[in-house]
Length: 235
Image (cartoon, rainbow, N blue to C red; front, side):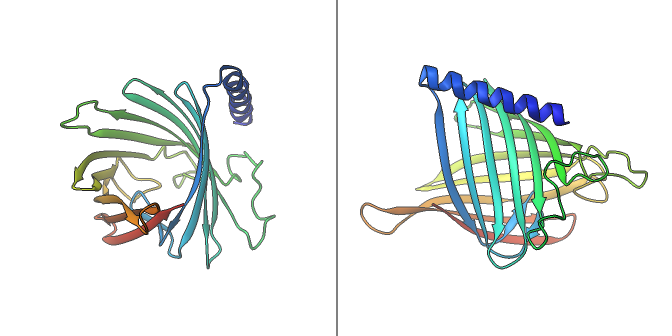
């Protein structure tokens, strides 16, 4: 696994050097503030969270770092993403890492021992239909490494499948989605639907020249019988 991230780092360095030479690199950065941190039908933090990000793209290859920091509780997460887009498909390699900021020595970012690491690595593929009438996207993700084990300490390879359909109503951008886990593992004790809801985005106008992007998401986890309503703004 160490060799994988060395290769990724070398690849990102090469991309940056080539992008600088070709002057075709796209850079993006920002931050969201969410009332809760909910992901794939699971509540990770029940306090407001600041979620910063930075990304660089070059010819369909994107490297991104994303974080989540609770404002009033001990929750810290830093994730690394590498994705490549070709036509209707996007292939991803994601590394999710959480930190205990009350004791920074509790977790070691460089620790890749299978039984000790706090990294959760997944691969995923996203297929987006190009139809303007029905631009549905399908995402299939599988955890391939980290603390996702069964009772015998074997990798579960927990998988998540989600379908989403975006559409517009007046000035609002909406998306309905439905996600399920395919078998027992990280997401639930058995296969089933775990994430159903609707997402809405719009610009909250504060003046004639200034507005703030607002995001609202209502979701339910039928498997755990949980309901979430999360609000967020982008800076």
